[in-house]
Length: 386
Image (tube, rainbow, N blue to C red; front, side, top):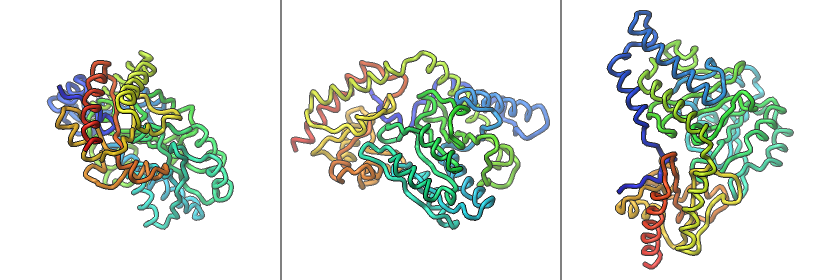
C-alpha cells in the first residue's frame, strides 16, 4: 500500500474533476472567445467555474481572474500590483513580504527590485508569525512609500496560520495593498474574501483535488494591477491568452467539492488525526520538535525535526517503504540546503536539515495514519542508530 503524506505539494484529482476535464476535451474544446456555438459552450464552462470559485472564496465572480496556477497568480499580484501603485504615485517604491514566503513571492519581490522597487523583509518570530509590532512600526514610518505587502495566509511548509485580518487592518489603515498567498488555505479552510481586509488573493486548484495548470487571482473591486501576460483581452484585459477551459472547468468542480466538504464541519476531526500522528511518533521516538506547535496551524500540516537524521535522505528511504513525505517545499526538491522557511524562523541549520513535512488530505484515515506512523518509526529508528 502506498500512503501519500505530501499533499501540500499536490493532491490527487477527484474523480469528478477528471470527468469534467475529459468532457471538456471531448465536447467543449472550442475557443471561449469565439462567437459561434462551440465557443459559446466553452465560455459557459469558464463562467460556471468562475461562479464556483467565487462561491468558495466569498467574492464576486467579476473579481476572479483565472491563471495557470498559484505562481502566476502571485507574480501578477505582486509585480502587477507594484507597477500599478507606482504608476499612480511615484513615491510608492517599497514592496515587502514575510521572511517565510514561498519562492514564487520571493522571486516576484526580486523582479520588482529589478524594476526599481525597494524590497523589504518582514520579520517573523520562532513560530514563523509576522511580528505585528514591527509591522505597525514599519507602516507608520514608511507606509506612505509602500506599494504592496505580501503575506502567506498559511505556510506551505509548517502550516502556521498568519493573523491575516490584523495584518490587513494595519495595511488598510496605512493605505497599502495587501496580497495573500492563499494556495494552502483555499479549499481546506473557510474563506470570506468580501469581509476581509485583503486586496489580492492567489490560489491553485491542484492543492484541493483539482488539476494542475489552473489557478486564480482575486482582485478586489477598485484595485488595479498591470498585466504581465500580454497579447489578448481575456480575463478583463488582466491576463492575455486563451483560457485553459478543461483545467478551469476542473477547478470549478474542485471548488464545489471543497464547499461540500467544508459544510461537513470536519476540520476539528482532521486536526485530531494530525495530532494523533504527532503523538504516536513522539511516544515511539521520544525527542522530536514540531515546528509551530504553539500557534494555530492548518489541520493537515505537521513539520517535525528528528535530530540525528537527514531529511532529504529520509524522503528517499520512506518512499521505498511506500510513504510519500517531503523535506520542505516541492519547488525546492533536490536541494541539499536546509529549508529557508525554517532558517527564517531561527532554527539552526542542523535541526532544519532534519525536518520532514507531513501533510494530510480530506481522504486521510486513522488506518492510514497508523500505518504511516509505523513506517516512520521504523525508518527513523534505523537512521538514528546508524
